[in-house]
Image (cartoon, rainbow, N blue to C red; front, side):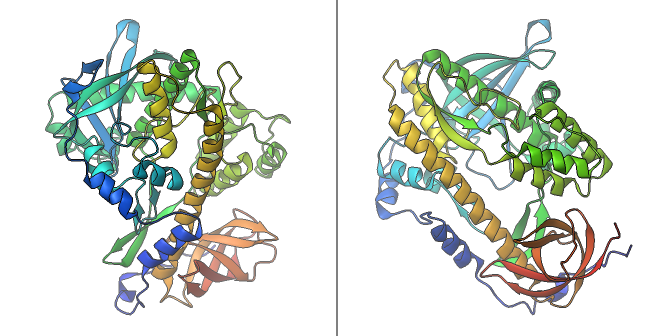
Length: 504
């Protein structure tokens, strides 16, 4: 083996050629069919919202402003879609309430704003530039659950039993008030014992105990889903940290207790939404990951690690294999995760008629799942919110079956497009960071090896590129030494030569 070379990136900042990543991001959006700018019709429509309807004027609405609501999100997120509250119930139960921003009350179906949101389908986060689905006046203002204001929300209730089972509860309108805007990293580090209690938590009486109770709830949920076969996957997606248009570094978002908390709560809340709509007997959109058609290749992949998986798809067996590999070889686990994700196939949206058997979500080990907790950021969540409100108001569904079928297909394509934009921009940003380092050598891991090409991920910085020389005989997961040949930020290319490899 060889020593890891430490490379200082600060020495290259003054000599680096300027590349306008914002222009590249806009072009990438257009390349994959998105509209990166809001048309004047949308801006004028949103600016015309002069008076926000007061929550007290809404019908059939509960006043839950006194509850200790809090939100957890990224440090720079202002488009807050949901917040959480929980309390102890009888017999060891934990009762959970999730408040979802009522976006539909301000964005009417078929309005200019709605049509633009439907076209893009999602907010796109490139690390360099964020392209929101809704204008900032809405998503970061009027429809955001930021502290300091009363908000109209759709509240989802469910109960977590001591064994981690979920009992779906009610869905209703409420007036809510966020008591604390918390940050993933700060809360996660504190809950994991690696840092002191965040000041934002300390400042709110009772919030410490509230978060401890939420943590107990998610531990139960996570344990239960793991037993059912939920897959623990951990890919590496490095995001650019840019200042004044200059890429300073690439950072990897670490999964922590706070992120797990929100993930588990959203899975349970989305399941409750499906249950509620199913009981109402109206068509809906579900989030589906089918039983993998490439299971045989997953079996082959496991065999290369000395493991045997059943011949037929088995989520529990796959989950146990992944847990063992994560513990045995954490450095290579992200690349195994990526391989499994590709073989599982992408998620998709599908219209589900009342009474029909749902396809389920193989990766999450749940049968009933949708996306309904982020209406500021995803259009499908806004659709589901409108469906819920039609049930609450005892009105006909605002969407026909054919509309839901067409929207499901379109929004599936928009999600795939957004991932392509985000992936391209990660490559472009990495190419900018490395552009003055031609000829330098790095340690890397092989992440792909096929007829289409051989690809590696550097250990530091976590940039991805293609092996153009010396690629013969390399295998996925192999440690190699590479030399940087060239970069092309405008096309997202980083080319390497392999100059050393780990022995088999």
